Image 1 (cartoon, rainbow, N blue to C red):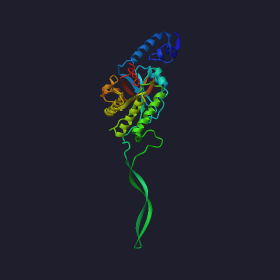
Image 2 (image 1 turned 180 degrees about the horizontal axis):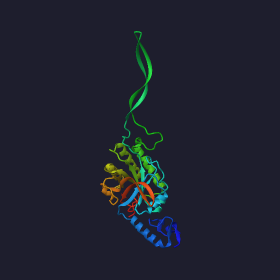
Image 3 (image 1 turned 120 degrees about the horizontal axis):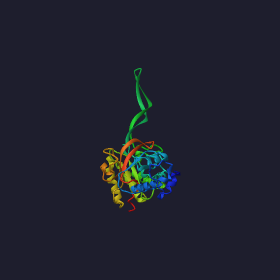
Image 4 (image 1 turned 30 degrees about the vertical axis):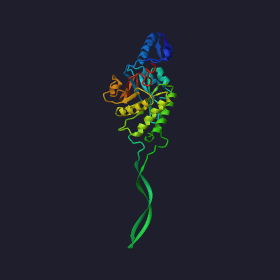
Length: 328
């Protein structure tokens, strides 16, 4: 059978969508076009379904176009991927500019913004540090039966209380965890999401890493972040958080949203390895408001000959940052 280019087949599909098939990347036989179109229809219908769970993964840096195409056509049905914006505490911009490419491959996406973190510290709290100061020290010696007094300058250690400062040039610091920075980082997340070409209504997941307790400064930070995203109106605030902190953060942001007239639960992406399996619904993590569950961390998988380090997730929707029900 004669061969045609893969992109020629795509021209026969609606909206320029690519679907996962067993056809090798690059070429497909003309006789298989009907099968491809049929598969496309099934994939689109499945993507529009609210029934999950839908398997997805996230990884720090963009794996490359070839790797993402290979995984898109692999037997294991990963349907969506975490899309990292460059952010204060994620200093990699390799995902940026890849939205259209991933969408064309058929990938759903979860937009992630890694904001400020506490890193086990208390933001703004004074800490004791050792400083050295020069002091004039009186010395008394006995010479030939006489007391001789002299003075010398010595550097001596002293303990002082200070408020730590961020390192020069840093964009990620415990000292940036406050309300003002929450507003500034929200503006940054909004601008970058828009620049990537995501549609209005796209969900932005604010990454909030696990804390033993949630200090008031962090609560001020994510509450201000939430308020600013809602005020702007183009995108929807959402949250990635560990199960240990989820109820606290959920309660706080629900109050902010309610005050702004926003009803319903905000999307939550919950991290917890306990009891996870890829056939479970996100709510089985133990939080009724969970829409995504991250349950396998730092694993390595190989699909279609491409090996990647990933975290494994299940989601209620096939594209967690796009709510297909929004237009209903």
